[in-house]
Image (cartoon, rainbow, N blue to C red):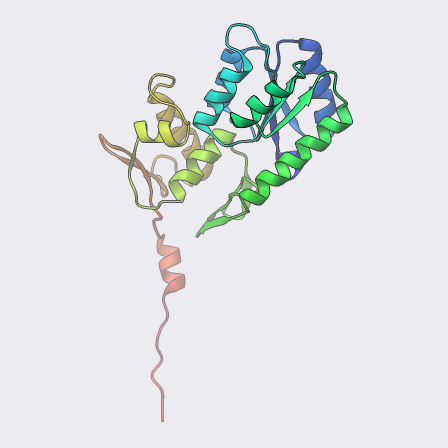
Length: 248
């Protein structure tokens, strides 16, 4: 995963720390979003899932350990703990709860960058690039890129996740509740089912030649959505072979 594609969420209640990390990582080509508490962190995780989280342990209201636990319930993205707590017990407990690395404050920006790069490389090796292709539509799951009729289309992280999830199971119908659970890693307690409807609408605007007559993203009335590859007349003609009788 190249740094230009990686999105980092920094959860820390100290604005100076967030600013230093953002400047440091953005200079390396990363996209950085800051959150000062658990509610802001959960909002980012639900709306635009990052590729890596840098998490402080000492936060107001809901602490970093609880946030780490909630993250691990939803996703396996790398989590790097950045904390002023230096005891071995804190480091061990964080790693046992699912953190991937632990850095103490004060920290070296260069070391932080190196550790972020190492965690992203490890995540990339664990999830190698895979391409899903249909006539006129290609998804590179590793690079998180989409081509429609040979041109790259810009999708949000959630739009890509939704399209990739549906395209990986062509013909299978998913309810909105299932999509919230499996794509958003959430539920109707956290998200409204209308969120799914709106994301499908936006996806159709970006990937369908005619959004009003979708080719790939099909609505199954009163149930949900499915990805269905519909062959166009042009593709059927191109695939047709005419057998010429042998003369002799």
